[in-house]
Image 1 (cartoon, rainbow, N blue to C red):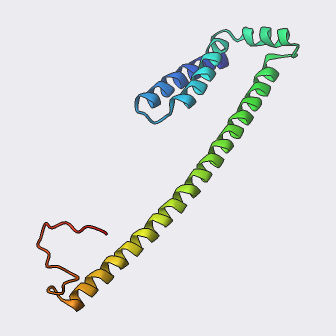
Image 2: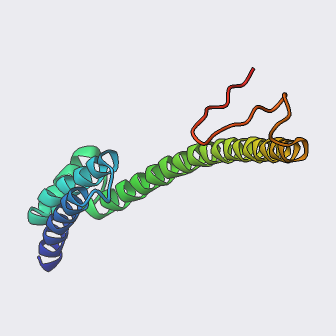
Image 3: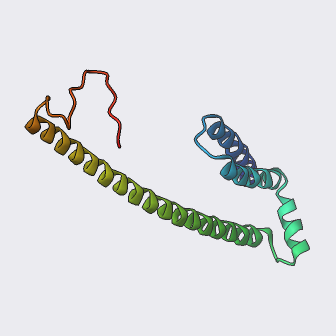
Length: 144
């Protein structure tokens, strides 16, 4: 009987903890739903332990403990597969973003070099050369 009470209390604590994580925005809703379902499914079995054996017998399993263990293993296997899929998606996205950042950095470096070249040419030619009209602060430079 003590295990049944512990199971029920644990299920209640799990539900409260999930809601707290949601409130703090530390857990996304799609994962919270999964863990709330686990807590809500565990809750009645904790307070009514014989119901596990009844469900097991109804499904043709000899005892409730075997059903709970099998269900837990299948559930955790599914969670692992889902998280592996999510990690794969994130790796692909990270790789794409890293490539885009590298291209942007290269473009920025080239633009800085072009600007430095133009400034150097302006300094060599001087401010009175007809190709480089004298510019005042605030004048806009237009590309042709």
